[in-house]
Each structure stands twice: as C-alpha cells, then as structure tokens.
Length: 296
Image (cartoon, rainbow, N blue to C red; front, side):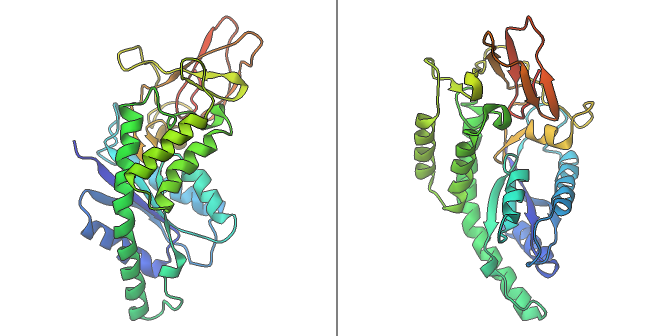
C-alpha cells in the first residue's frame, strides 16, 4: 500500500506560507499538507506557538484516513521548519523530534523585503526548489526508517523509549535527523546507523541496555505482542501519547510493539510513563515499555 506523506510547516511568514504549501502539493504526488501555522521570520518558537502547532497536527491526524482507529497507520510525517537563531529551534525539535522527520528551511531562502509580489514569488520559488532537493533525500531516509521500525523492529535502536532508555537515545535521534540536514545518501545513512549500534551498550544477546542496566528485549514478530498504543479516546492519554505510539521519525510502526524488560533485584520499580509516573508492583518480574514510554 502506498504511504501518504503528511507534511506540517512551521515558522514561515504569512505571505509565503500558503503559496509554498500549495506548491508542495501541486508538485509532489502522495503528499498532503495537513498542518501549518504562520510565524514572522524574526519571531521565535514560543511555547504557545508550539502548543498550537501540535494541536493542529493532532487534529489533522485524527481526521486523516491513513491514521486508522486500529492497526498500523499508513503514512509518513514530515515537518518543514524555518531554522531560528538561538534556543528557539531546539524547543521545536524537542516537541516534534520523535514523531516527525524534520526538514530545516534555510532563512537565507527568504527575501528580506516581502512587501512586493516579486519578492514573495522569488522566495516561494527558492523554497520550492530547495524542497524538491530535500524531499529526494527525505524519501530515501524514510524508506530506511520504515524498514527499521517494521521489518527489524525487535532489533533496531530507533524504537527505544527515549525517556526510560536514557540520555544515550540522543545519539539515535541525532543520527536520523542529522542525515536529513547533511543530505546523506542511503548508503551513508545505513553506515551511520551501523556505527551507532556498535557504540550502544548491549547485553550478551545483543539487546540494548539503557539507564540502570535495564535490558530492552522485544518479542519477535511471531511472539506475543501485547503492547497497546492508545487511541484518541483512551482515558487520560494525551495527543502526544497517541502520536508517539504510532510514529517514530516520520514512519509508522506496529502499535502492539513493546519491550519486555526484566526487573533486577534491588533495581528501580519507578518509571516515567508516557503522561505521568508508574510504579511497578512487587511480585512483577518484568515491566512492559512501549516506544512512546507507555509503562504497563
């Protein structure tokens, strides 16, 4: 089945946003812009802006036919964002970096004076030209990510739960998102992944070890998989719980996927769950942790 690429756009000024998104859809098959929020070039990504953009993304996914109520979503998620000076961009990456594959827009592509039609048209054309180039890289990377989180899900490092796994997960995120920024070839990206895996700590069976020595062992495809990705109406779960329960780096994975983590004697039984904290009861020999950090 062909995957639709759903695109969100952040940080572009009002004069450019609509013609840019219209041009993307016009030029690329199986691509749909489903969330966008204007922002003036000199303005930073405030918490209020990021909250509103995330709300638009969640609303768009709720209404997307590719995000079926049950089963694996049949979509990719790409976020084009205008790179900002200072810590502002870092906050956007923190908010969307697990869900989406992030594609930076160079501010130099935008003309300083946007009051005239010629300046606006020139900026839009420059942005679309750059987007064509970047989407070629993005699609190659998404193909590899999709293979990792579906075919190799019980062995890949890409589905590790970032909070409970610990600070080492930052290297995974930087490897994936850095491949986009550096326009990596598929061969270079795969080589980077291979080198990354070699540097991550594992047990004697090759399963990844996170903070506190917790081993992340996932059932094989033929094994019992009883992870439960929350749906939009699942109790106290937030939109982020739902989206991160289906998407990783822009690719959809099996919502029943989870890790069986054996609890060691004297080790912690307190975990950070996807929208709160979780204490594993005494007598439990293991804890189930999903890629979105849902602890059961």
